[in-house]
Image 1: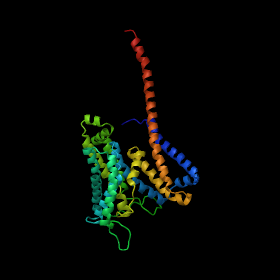
Image 2: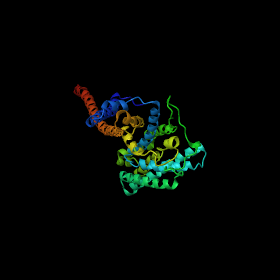
Image 3: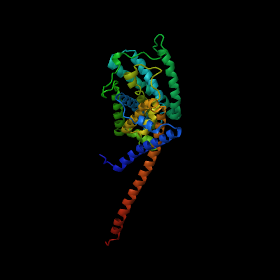
Image 4: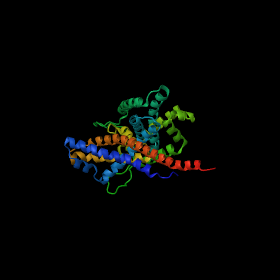
Length: 372
């Protein structure tokens, strides 16, 4: 067991706190500059959520968490999987089509559909992995392009596979059977809505992420390759295979992002299915420093801001897009804050080591000068 280091814990907590303070100040200055009511805005955003809003925050955080973990797997390998959004779209569509056929009974239909989503997401991510390993194509470029391709392909296939009712403008896949629809948990007293059942999936994914990357040889090899490919090669790690594995694993996890929405809310895939989740995951993974617990807090913060922003237009007469500014400033500030804290921590460590060396030198000198 490693002894707790109070200074290290304090430094780790200082960065996000500093980022939040900076975001508060900058956003307030923006509000003052455009003549919006600063007090009303913060009063609305920071108000205690009502029971229904609390459920929405938990549900959104579960989805954000899955997205951020998918991104974080790549980040720990020094891979920038910008294609999580496309991988999630392909996977959600594939799972919705499969589940809607009702070939299997309820729980088994859910389980196999989740596997289908992971396979679809992993296969889509494998395209970028292959291009990087075999052709040297940057995963940033390939995954961004694959996002656009995924959007087009899924839109085209949705037209082919849609179950459109006569006279309706809604385009969506066949609704999954009631036996495969998850009602959720009544966790918040007074709330009329329910927490997604597949919140448990997010918890399981978070635990496996922590365990595999922190407690297994595979996780060590993945992190070692991300820090130094040459060192990893010297220790016997096959880097191309590790790149393929990490990217496919990231895509498979991206396939899980839409599962709480599919089985707990929408029950089909259509044009109204939530978008932009992959890009939110990138920001949340950075904010949470790719740490399982840090990402959980970052997901809750992101979800809190999203849900609370719905009331800005009505209560403060301010566009809810203001929250996008807050989120962007938080992300920008946290990157700078972590770098400042890292440098400060490094200087403090160097000072501590220098003092210890200076304290030990007189004792060593006195021993050398003593008569034999």
